[in-house]
Image (cartoon, rainbow, N blue to C red; front, side, top):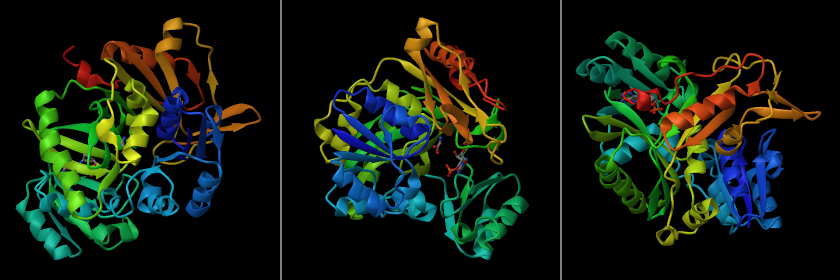
Length: 424
Ligand code: AMP
Ligand code: GLY
């Protein structure tokens, strides 16, 4: 089978790595891929989706997998499907679950899916009145995609009003902030849940925990994610069952009712408040770096998982998950997440320890190859992934791997998985 993966990050690399090991897959294309994905397949520089679909048809691509949200929101799935191609991901309509927070919140309310109390508005007076009814901290969100920056957690009523005013005036996020959500602050712990959906049926992957802040101890600015681990002990069968019954199932049946059956990855940002799961947000794609740690935990064919989801036949899939843990530590460049950094050459020591060779690997992200040398050119450069019989073992292996990697200005958190290991 031939597969095309759209995207260039560590997430797309990790999907490619899993497919590369899958005997069903003969050829992988990445559009555009990164400086290391060409070791797994072929990088393709076509950016226009119509042209990319023609390329997929010409190369007899059996399955296209879309990594990031932007092409989904832009309708890449609709374009491919119109040409009769098999593609894994939601339509542009369904991708509004991530593309518009207002669409998402109204959908949740309509179908009774638990989420924070909110108002949606374009009017400052209405926002301000609702803010007065809440206790600080107060959450203010821009409607549209803001590369993960459109959420303000304001510590006071005045700060919440200021954030609302700045968003509504277009000063903060331009058009993406023309309409806003103001919502109550949920106090609990966060989980990342991923359901692979075919419109009707779904498979849930082990719950993961991300580390969004830049610095140890969850300090510093928000990032795309500095590390993740799975499965997390912060969830048990009872909580999984609540998430299925109260969140995933009403979402899938609601999307069917809306005439936009949900196909693709449903990434549920869950806040667990006193044992009850509430939806913080939906994303319509895998998390990054969550994908990098989930892919190696799937023992059954990863190709089958995506292919069956893209062809509405997940019901017949028997997904097998390894009885292991994975920890991923993101290594980022010097100025991440503030600004870009000068490209730095990456040197990886030869891995001599057999255990490390077998149980750890690097998922490459913001890297470029030039004259046979590898350079760190993106914010998040790579993820060191360790797989072990316990979270502690997986964590130790991931950190051993970070010691093999050298580039000027490299930085990474030293406490990934600390919440799981606190009582160990
Ligand atoms: P979002 O992009 O909506 O997931 O928000 C980004 C982050 O802000 C989440 O991962 C949470 O850590 C935090 N957050 C968002 N909404 C809330 C809320 N209502 N209560 C508490 N924290 C929130
Ligand atoms: N790691 C969180 C995200 O990809 O949005």
